[in-house]
Image (cartoon, rainbow, N blue to C red):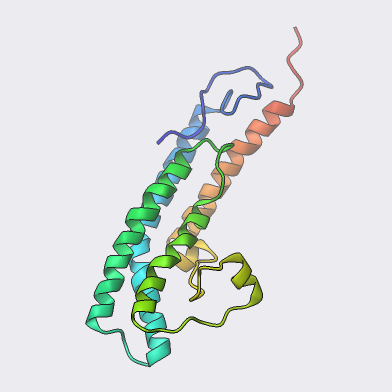
Length: 182
């Protein structure tokens, strides 16, 4: 995975990645890889649990075999779609990243939504903010935090955010440092 830029460059260089500490970039890449692996592993189970939870809430009974099979297939499809997009985002230089991996994961709500719609589960009532922020999330499924997707992702997501912030802040410090005197 390629994160950041070269490790050369002069102090105060404004080229993204110029002067980055190679060890920081390697740590960020390893942390990003662990986060992406965790997301891909967690999505199928999250889709299945989400479908089951809403089916039970609506019908009072567990989902039938056909709905469970559809949820399992939808979970695999979510991982196959979201996983590579998360990996691509995380492989992008930190200054060029537009969005977050959690925002991409929130888009995975479409897969359990499709299964629930096909199973005849009605849309849920959401507050005005949720309707504005996530208009397509008619079942209010989008994870608000990493732990909503999977408890094991909570720490991975926080560690990734801290590692990214470390690289970004180190760049900002280099850019605002006075040029060396000769």
